[in-house]
Figure (tube, rainbow, N blue to C red):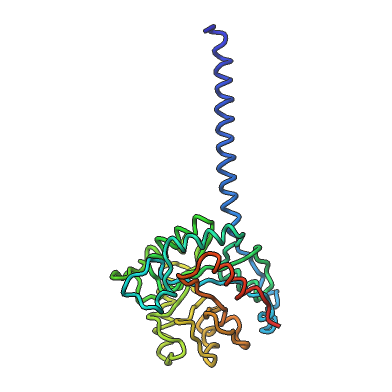
Length: 293
C-alpha cells in the first residue's frame, strides 16, 4: 500500500468507528428512554400554600386502580382453596405485568396518589399501583425483578415479625427491604404480626404500629407514611388514630371506602391466581373506571 494513503485510511477507520459508537450510544439512550416512560418523577407540592381537598372532593375523584399480591409461587397440595386467591404462579404474574405494560399502564407510588387526591396533582396516563403484602421473599426475587423489566415500581407492605425468617415460606431480609427502598420502591407498614386492626387494644398501637414503623425507618432510612390493613379489615371509630401515629393514608381491599376517612380507606383488589391476564384487565376496568357521585 502507498505510504501516502495510510493517513487517509486511518481517518476513514476513525470515522467509521466514531459513527458506530454514536449509533450504539443512540440505541442505548433510546432503550433507556423507553424504560423511563414507565416511571414518572414525583411531583413536589407546596402543601403550605395549597389548600387540601375536603373529603367530598377526594371521594369524587376517579379512583386509581390498586392491585394487591401476596405469594408468587406455584400451588402445592397442602394449600387450602381459600389460599389460592392469595397465590399467583410466577409465569402468570409475569404475564399479568406484561399485559399492564402492553396496555399502556404506568405504575405510581403512594405519594403520587396522595398528591392527586389531596392537591389535584396530575398523574400519568393510565396510572396503576402495584402492592405486595406480608414480606414474602418471592415478592423480591420474582416480583421486583419482573416489575423492573417493565420499568414499574411497587409498594411493599411489610409485616415486621417475618423479616429474615426461613421455612416453608421464606421472607425478605433487611438487606432486601433496603434494596427495594434504594431502588425507588415504597416500603410501608402491615403491622408486626398481622393482627386484625378491628381488634386493636391500646397496647397494640405501640406493638403493631409504632414499633414496626420505627424498625422499617431504621432499615430504609426513610419515613414510613402508609399502611395496609391485615385482611383488609378496618374499624371506623379508630381510623383517626392512624393520622395521629404518622400515616398519610391507608389501604383496605375491595370493600366500600369510609366517607369520613377516604384517605385511610383506599381500595385495592386482589389479582387471584385463577385469573388470566384478560380477566385482570376486565376486573381493573370494572372495579375502578368510575367516579363516586
